[in-house]
Image (tube, rainbow, N blue to C red; front, side, top):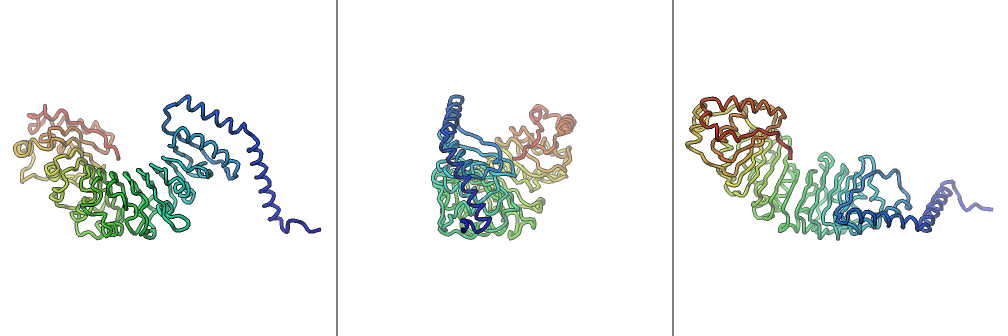
Length: 437
């Protein structure tokens, strides 16, 4: 008599399918499971009637079978009745349980950390019509393209998505995805944060959101900037509602295709001409570059200017404060030696600055210094000089916790003849530890 199985492998496949079927039958015949889930969710509703967000933390523990997926399908479906905002946290060596679930399609807020790109993208695409906020942290490869392209070659539209944060490791996103000429995936986007290198050879992430985008964080290389310029992104008419712009240019070769730092800044400043916060981290090769202050004339709305890899001398700081009437915070490096201003040296500088510039920069309040290899006395003197002419300059943020050294130097200087006549004006100045943003 011929066996129904020709090989051991066929028998193993049959046995596994049989076991899964029996397990599913057990779950379907066990109303207590659903009853317990319902009771659990009711209890949560009683304890937190104003619940806004649920965070699910933990590992999958090797759950691969449909029975476990069915259980979490029921559980998450009930939780979603309380709030459509769910955050999934899991250790790096495992995937969130949500990736096992196939029934969720009405998430409005998804915050997930996993390296399983295919499953993350599938979950996001399935919820594309409902999603308003999508936050993904991953070391995976090719995430952006997977979010937008369907398996059949079509494109997904996240029509309600307002917030998109893709927290990627740059070294895993140096590849370039193919151009997507017909895609308009994020037409309602207000915040775009892409910490990996810009992955596309065209402007697909910016299409359709010219009138909505308010906040942009982007990492680029020289070839990305060239392509975005060609696509019309780096122009004065692009994205007029942008208020926060952070574009990190990390080409270790320095300025790359740019002839000068002025040209580089001019191009980046053209993104969101009305933005109040401008941050342009760059290569360390830019630390001693020069630029034309007048290029800021067309951007009077700037309130926070972050040039963390550029050394700004005291006269440049004064010129920037004069040029930008709304400027409140300046982030930069600082040269080691104080040069003369208009040919005037210490100790005559305090009186000269007061007579020529005071008062100025009524909104300026804090100078944030980036690098650690700075001389305390030089920092304190610069801060005192600015405090003499900027009536609301109250804080100098330094990258060290040894704030007592700064205060000791401060006390020593305000008792010198050059400053002691202005002690009441200077007493408000404080030295604080800089916070990385």
